[in-house]
Length: 180
Ligand SMILES: CC(C)(COP(=O)(O)OP(=O)(O)OC[C@H]1O[C@@H](n2cnc3c(N)ncnc32)[C@H](O)[C@@H]1OP(=O)(O)O)[C@@H](O)C(=O)NCCC(=O)NCCS
Image (cartoon, rainbow, N blue to C red; front, side, top):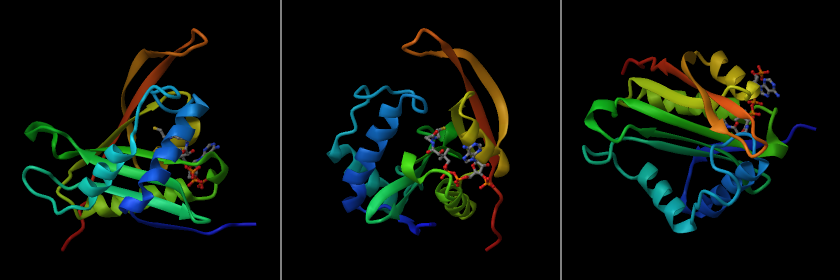
């Protein structure tokens, strides 16, 4: 049975769901750089992130976006695009996306990416960039489908608890500008 989800800009009441989702994906151990319990995402920091994404952009705080996917009354996915922190890279948006394990493979990730690409096409960003483990085939397939290309690879960038090393793939695409 297919279940419905909606995508919308995050609001502060999503913050606890965002913290829980990030912690759950970290606990899976396969997808994030931080291991379970390693990256503290306190609720007040997440609320600040939501506010930063929904506030009016300025020269001090350039445009960024944070969309959530909600399904069955909980946060089941999110995408965040943050501009570079410096004048020299603030034309680049750094993308992070994740979907709850029990909601994967149902179109949520694709819908989040589509929404962020649409947002980016109306933003001042010129390029979208991300990094992904080389073993994360579902994520790499999704990014390729949306026009992201491999720009490089950091070999053995990460050491896993079992002693194996993993490569980090750098991917990016330029933003297709929407005519006003
Ligand atoms: C990567 C991720 C966001 C994809 O979200 P999703 O909701 O499962 O993806 P969708 O159902 O929208 O699928 C979109 C595309 O992704 C690819 N994909 C999804 N699951 C896949 C799988 N198990 N194997 C291969 N490709 C897969 C396909 O290309 C798919 O396109 P299709 O619908 O035309 O087949 C999700 O798997 C996830 O959150 N993973 C854990 C966190 C993570 O890895 N985040 C990215 C870190 S860089």
